[in-house]
Amino acid sequence: MIFQIKAYLQFLLRSKNRHGVHSPFVYQFVENCLNDRAPYEAYETLADANRQLAANKQLIRVTDYGAQSKTMHPKQRRVCDMAAVAGITPYRQQLLYRLARYFNIENALEIGTSVGKATVALAAVNVRIQTIEGCANTQAVAKDLLADYSDRIQFTNGTFEAILPTINDQKFDLIFFDGNHQYEPTISYFNTLLQTVHHKSVWIFDDIYYSAHMQRAWEYVRKNPNVSLSVDTFRWGILFFEPRPNKEDFVIRPPFFFDTLM
Image (cartoon, rainbow, N blue to C red; front, side, top):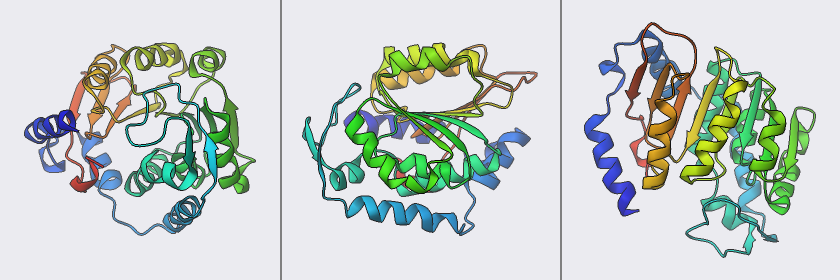
């Protein structure tokens, strides 16, 4: 947490709101997606999923392949406890929904299903989703939660190292990286999936300031020559690949700053 606080203070010094952005594309993205306050009906679907998870007292055995949880028992956890601290917050669920809607995402890959909080945000936009999770018991919780969307979600259980090379011949409109908050695995997944990119692809990296290692991974991926534009919102790093005259990097202050350190 000390690292994150220091990183956030540095972020505040570098970040801008929409009025400091000179790119029309990024300005519209900030104005009409990041800062969108419309009360979408789908938000109730997300809230209902969160209530279901919060009420689930089931105790499951968990296998962690990535960075270990800092707050939960390493082997056995209650679903409600996992939902409280794992995955994305309700604010970022809504943001992921808006982002998928704004960019007309049709085909998404999620690296790290967890209990399905991000998956339901994508499913609410009618996105076709392939979601990968290393822990079968955790993914089973997500399957139950998302049973109504089974026609558009492909659940894959296995390690990312084993699964990603078998699907990197596909094209994804969006990839959400939320499975292993360590430097070398993040870089490996990034490089493995680069050939899935098309010019409208959007990639989101969660928790880019989780640690010094994740910050270094973010610096690596945003500087890749295939990346034409990056947006750093502190909790998320967002990459775009559409060819542009000049490579651009933006540090954008999110509208709800209280969410950044949660």
